[in-house]
Image (cartoon, rainbow, N blue to C red; front, side):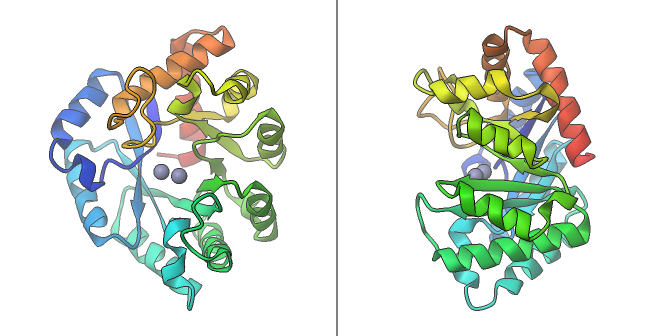
Length: 259
Ligand SMILES: [Zn+2]
Ligand SMILES: [Zn+2]
C-alpha cells in the first residue's frame, strides 16, 4: 500500500520522523509520495532526512496556489523554482501540488492561473505527472488543464471531494483521482458514493498528512500509517476486501508515477 500524498517533510514531523516512518512500515506501506513546496527551503532540505529514513519515498514538487501571489509579477519564476528543486532531488517523480484554491483565495486568482499554467507547461516539458489541488475552483481547473494540454501527462486530482458527476468529469478527461480520510467521515455521503463509483484502476488513496486525519483520529495530526484506514473505508463502501484495494491502488500508483 502506498500513501499517494503526504507532507512528511513538513516541520510537523521533524521531531519524530523515525517513529512516523516505523509506524508506516509496520502498517504495510511500501512507500509514499511526499509533497515538497518549491518555495520552502527548509522543507526541501528536510526531504533528505525523509529519504535517509525511508528510501522508498518519492517526491512531488510544486508551488501551491496559496503561494501564487509571491509570483504574481513573474509566474515563470514559479516554474523555474520547481525546475531547480526537481533537478536537485533525484527521487522527484511529479510536479505538484499545483492548482487553484478559491475557498481560501490566499492569492489573487489571476496569479493562481498564471502560476498554474506555468507549472503545467513544466510538467509537459519534463514529462512528469501533475498532482492537482483544486478547491471550489473545478470549472477553471478543468479549463486550464485542457487549454494547457495537461492530458499529455498523467493528472491526479488529489484529495478529491466532489460528487459522482464531478468524478465522471475527471475520469472522462483521462485524469485519475485520489481519496483521503474525508471518505471516513460520517457526513461525507457524496464522497462515499464516489468511492464506490470510481474504477479501481483510476483510484489512489492518500492521507494528506498532517491534515485530514481519518476516523477515529479526527482532529489529531495525521500520518501515512493511517492510509490503511482509507483503504478499509473504500473496501467497505465497494463491498471489496482491503487487500484488493491496497493492491489495486498500489498498481495505479505505479502506472502513474513510475516510482
Ligand atoms: Zn491539497
Ligand atoms: Zn497536500
